Image (cartoon, rainbow over all chains, first blue to last red; front, side):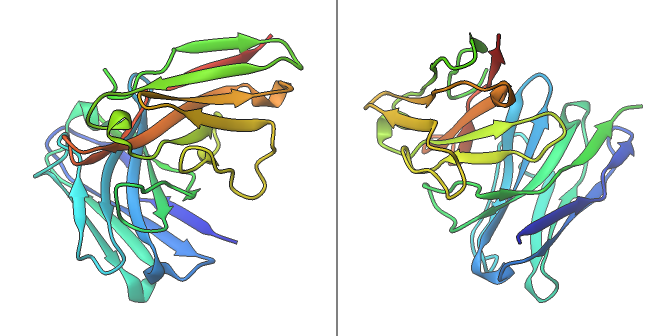
Length: 121
Length: 111
């Protein structure tokens, strides 16, 4: 059974940093691309960042480019999102999601339960 | 403002059929990129309902179906049940943004 478990969320002040983690199990992690998607009450679902199986292809939404960094550790079946210079509008439930391949036809066949990030002073 | 446009809400009585539309533009749906659909229940992980326009993953009931035209896509749910009450999102790729994009979501209410 595929399991994706996010962690690392919390309350953080604007301008500070946070690192999210996603522990994967139940599938061959380095066979798949992975993504971060966030859910906000006002905007709904928003793709944040994606990474292919060997970290050779990486993408970011314009809203986080230059502030967030995605990475993965295939040896430890883990996905990460380093979030710097956080803004109140980054407040959201952050999901990691599994993707068969990294391409224009990508979709998310499995999701974690999410970790909540709140950016507020 | 989402790149893909969905109605904010739809409703139907148990047993009825409802459809949810997803309209894009020349850089996403009209550019022939695939459309996918998800269901989001409060407190639960999003669930993939339809991938690549019309395909159902194993385990998704055949009450859920989807179609697309050159300019839009739609999700149909037949035989509405109380547990179908949820938020539904479409997703595609936008070549102008170089990003995967979602619709704004549609809240389905079962009357």
